Image (cartoon, rainbow over all chains, first blue to last red; front, side, top):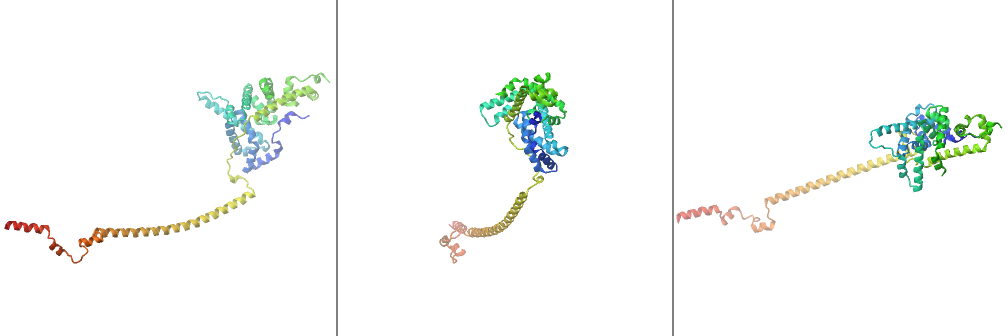
Length: 206
Length: 182
């Protein structure tokens, strides 16, 4: 029997696991072209991961840039080269958290609440794929937002990492610095709320 | 089959199965493996989750720009082609520099000569102009006017002119004398 958790959650770069380790080793020795290859391999995944949490294309681009710069600067601190992917995701999560922390502080000084959904503006900027697609997009992200508001911070993070970023339980535990049973508990709770969210499920069925 | 194996999975067990099937009791795992109904239920839910991820990915824009890295070209490991192109580029730059130097020196020399010639010509023109001005200040009349005025005849000296045309001062004196006599 194929175990679904393992089968679904294999990293998309698993076929290049050895290659990634080799690239990380070379990059750590100062080979810039090796680090550029790592950027090529992981940029989209990190960008998406940040976008899911900020729903702003510009913010996602800026944060992705910062994450890779930090990764490059701190690469010498990475002990286990095979954990580059989870190390990168951990860095990304921390960076997104910092971003929201700063935003909250800045928001405190504003007279008008700047809580507009950034992704809605971004959708307009993108290539116009048609009005219907635009509405579906808006509706989808609106539902994701409503759903994520139902989750606690840990539940949301675990759920997103598992089903949007496609990390497995072990990787999530490494990224969040939690043990696997804690991750499973939060994932279970997140799944329960997802199953109860009939609107989102219905939207996915359409 | 035992009772446990006959009983279908409840919702909690189904969710646990999605999280990690190995955490379920062995009997429940066996049931799940054997029961197409429970298996189908679990797979449907997993498909919804997979669809959720795919839709999110589809509705995410592609990054507009590539990540810019802080390191310089020198940290990269260049290929042999890189060295070939680099050598060719250096040779090209050297040739261009030599050509610029040669052309520059020729141009500077020519410019200097041209400048000296034009300066000499200007000085000569200035001298000629000054000579003309001096001549005019001495005698402003043109040559044909000199004949009419008698300026050009060397025989007409100052004494002769005074004889022909006496000065006004002398005439006044003689009139005064004549007045007394009259």
